[in-house]
Image (cartoon, helix red, strand yellow):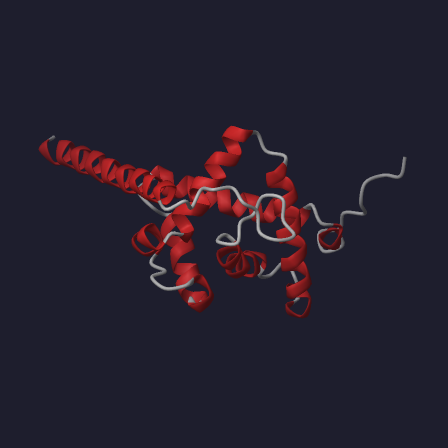
Amino acid sequence: MHDLAMNRRTLLKVGLLGSTILAAGGLLGRCAGATVAVPASGFAVLRKSDLPMLHRLIPLLLEGSVPLAEMPQAAAASLTSLDQGLHHLSPALAAQVRQLFDVLTQPLTRGPLTGIWGDWRQASDDELRAFLNRWQNSSLALLRQGHASLLQMILMAWYACPASWAHCGYPGPPAV
């Protein structure tokens, strides 16, 4: 019985620590102006600071769904589709996505939470896979939710693109 109580106590401490780190990261990001919602050129929602991370993660998450030769076009289409999807989110949901992207792009939170200590553009595919795996299997529900959100947003953006439909056998919407 004592071991079980110790495990619960440890779990609560780890959860509290993780929540504190994420909250502090969001606060530091706001203080540094990271959450200013100024879209990058050509985008409605995505900011310049979001793009390096997304440029690295999108091809990795689309691996196996897209032939290698078509990956640059698929990644660009997914990025455009993601931006359009984010543009139609409620303000509350858009703020949560911005917070997630801030945590992933701010150096103070990116390194400790992802293991990507340098620029996203310099991270190897193995480092990115390790980050995704760590978040997917984290004992912190917040990190697991972050992983699921990233995965769902990117895959939904890709499968909203007509270029993805042939791969999965979808003939497209019926003509009206």
